[in-house]
Length: 261
Ligand SMILES: [Fe+2]
Ligand SMILES: [Fe+2]
Image (cartoon, rainbow, N blue to C red):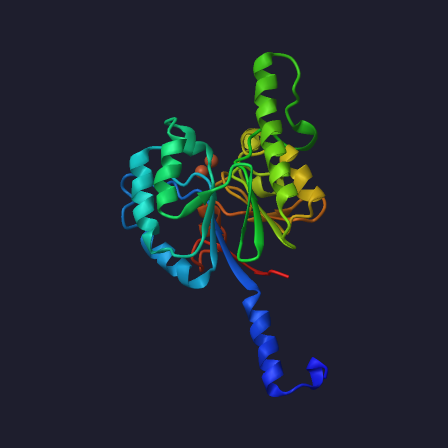
C-alpha cells in the first residue's frame, strides 16, 4: 500500500517522522560578555532554549578574555539545556587564558571546536576561529618579510584545519562555524580600511569544495547579515550587533531550520 492511499494513522506517522527530522539551529556571535553582564544575557538564552534545538556561538563570547567574564557567561548559560557549540574569537586570546576559558564554559556545556568535526542531532559541524588577511585579489600574500609570511601562514593553517574537519563529517548536511569571515559580502558596511582584518577568502575554498549547507561567523560588528560564497553557499554574519541592527523586531539570534536527511 502506498503512503498516499494509506490510512490516517499512516499519514500521521509520516508527519511525525518528518517533524522529527527538522532541527532548529540558533546562531549568535560577539556576545562580548563583561564583568558587568550578570543578568543581562540570561533572558535572551531562556528565550532561545525554547525556540531552538542547538545553539552555536561564533566567538568573542567574552570581552577581554578574562576568566571572570567566562564565569559570568557560564552562569548566564545555566538555563540552556540544548547542545551548545562554539569557536573562539580574537577577544578570547587577549589575556592568554584560552584553556581556562574553555574549561569554565565547557563545564557549562559549551563544546569548543578548533579544527574539530562534531555531529549532533543528525547535523555535522566543523569549527575554527579563522583568521584575517583580506579578500579576493587584495588578499595578503606570503611574500617579503618573515613576519608577513607568518601572518599569512596563520590564515593558511586555519583553512587547513577547517578543511580537515569538513573532510571528517559523514552527515548529509555540514555546517561551518567561524569567527572571521570567509567572504567580503558579509563584512560590507564596515570601513573599507579594515576589511583585511575581518576575514580571509582563503577560508572560502573548503566551504565550496565540501558543499557546506550553511556558514556562520561573527567579528564584523558593522557588516551585512548574509552573503554567499562563489559557489552559492549561504554565509551568515551573526555578530549580535548585526542581528540587532538588521532585525530589530526579533531576538538577536539567527534561527535556521534544517532537515537532517
Ligand atoms: Fe567581536
Ligand atoms: Fe572578533
